[in-house]
Amino acid sequence: MPSGAVVESYEPRRQQKYPSPRNVAAVPLHPRLRERLDYEAHAFPDLTLLPVPEGRQVVRAMSAETDRLAGPPPALDRAEDHSIALGSSRLRIRLYFPKGAASPSPVLVYLHGGGWVFGDLETHDSLCRELAARSRAVVASVDYRRSPEEKFPVALEDGYATIQWLTEPETARRFNLRPDRIAIGGDSAGGNMAAVLAVQARDRRGPSITGQVLICPVTAYNPDTPSYTANGTGFGLDASFMPWMWNQYLTSPRQGPDPRVAPLRTPDLSHVAPALVITAEYDLLRDEGELFAERLRQAGVPTQSTRYNGMIHGFLDYRGIAREGGDALEEIAQTLRRWFEA
Image 1 (spheres, rainbow, N blue to C red):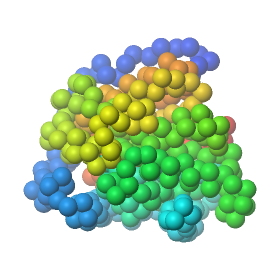
Image 2 (cartoon, rainbow, N blue to C red):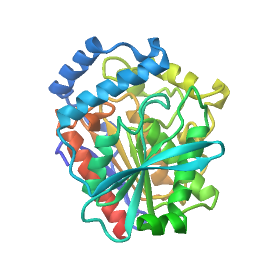
Image 3 (cartoon, rainbow, N blue to C red):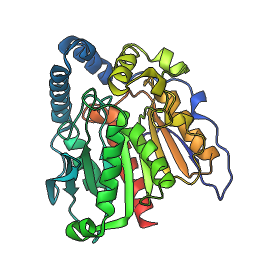
Image 4 (cartoon, one colour):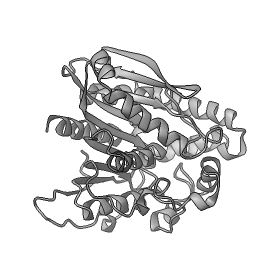
């Protein structure tokens, strides 16, 4: 972990309090990230001004560039595409099997970011390969149905169906998996869904969740936080994108306060899975992510919150130009191994 990262953790048995990372002094934006942001601002159009299919192609092109900068992903034993039936449609799931995995293997269910509109199995393929290789766990990447074609809460139900499928005895035997060692994770909108699914698994008395990894998560609906104002322009994810995103995802603004949309509003967060919350200093979502981590701690949930200073939203994608992206991947992998081995 880089020396500039600020870690805040809580273990219920210790009952210790830690200073809030929101009080630390600012670190300058990583200069290579500034160069990259300036390049992208000129090279790629505003996604909100494009038809959604064209915007998705732009996001794929941007992802392909950052993947090239990161270099070839680590070799795996194999990666396989599968699908499960959901009514009249089928849900695609890509399974990444690392070399040297335990037998049977624990699983990380991964939900990609992209504002519920963009992103897919391909944009997050390299990242999922990294997570599988580093954690030595099978990663199940979910090709959930996106907005505006499918509105809230369809994507969430796709995620929950994936967890149920992975914990079925037949699936566990087929792929040599441990149904009692299932973690969930995601970035941005995917981090939002992972947080919500942890609550739903508790409330529905569904599969037991080993841990939740929330990377730069969306946890609030149009919040009034300092980071939302200070980092709302010029750092990749702009505040102007958020109302457009909500309009794609939700049927009505009245759904905004729903805890399944804004998990920060969940009345009771006790007895959900342990959490790792990753935030970035120059991300407009920084404060809501850290506030959610604090809510988890207050509810007695073992939680580690790490702010990566000098970083932007989605900085793991820029691991080829800023080593903190790789550091965050390693922190996630170490945390997963600790949860799975407990």
